[in-house]
Length: 79
Image 1: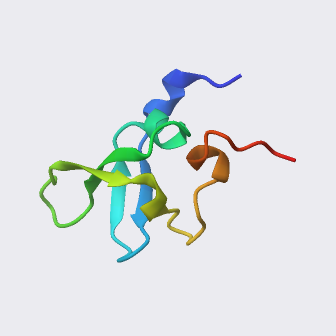
Image 2 (image 1 turned 90 degrees about the vertical axis):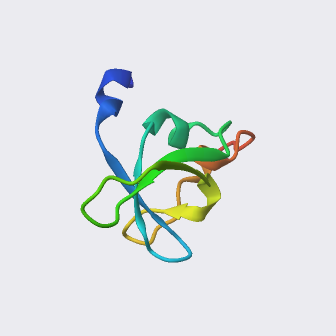
């Protein structure tokens, strides 16, 4: 069973177009297939950046892998 309290940890993803690292501010937003936008904080410089909303489709894992389809498509059914 998923423990939602444990989802308070930091998660870093990358903007696909330019490779910028971003901190996900609410992990539940990124794993919810009903959310098309997610609030992030760009990881650049030493000062904390202002939060911004980005399309979830534009994010990838730092390894270069795309986000799981079940996080992006509310109608996704594993076949």
